[in-house]
Length: 174
Image (cartoon, rainbow, N blue to C red; front, side):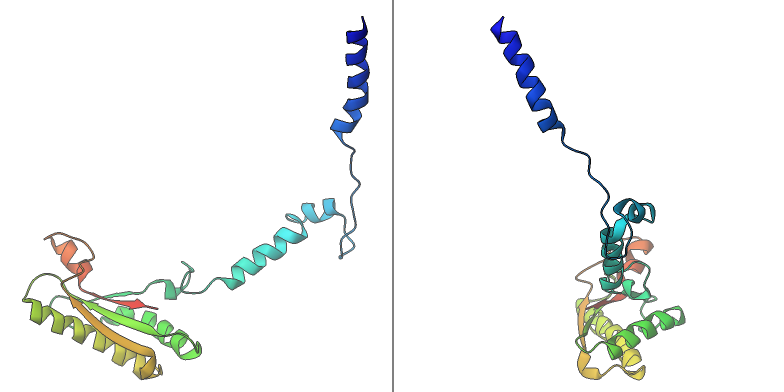
């Protein structure tokens, strides 16, 4: 008989302690309650955090920025820049000219056709063509380095025209 009475008394004492008390809305620095802030879009803390994240992301890491694209493709056996890449390269030139601590390495690549020596030279000519474009657009020459890999680092392994066309490129590496 004592055991059921003890369990009943213990549950009556512990229930209010374990269930907690309801909280009242507090006033924030804006004069709004927490509930009002939540109704406006997630509360004060999440709104400021989202704003900081949106503005602190580098344009190089933002998929909606033209600077996110850092590969220029070339035709077969040529180092001429296709005019469709002019605006992209101008965006990179503007970024490099405005950003004091930014520098870039231009990596020239080719497909596997041709000798190793020829492909190293062609990769170098492609990187130099992009370098000249950037310098003409106002980028200080000391912010740009060029490097040729020739056929050594294909973008896609294979012997198809698709694999070849993806390998004929200059990559801008910040």
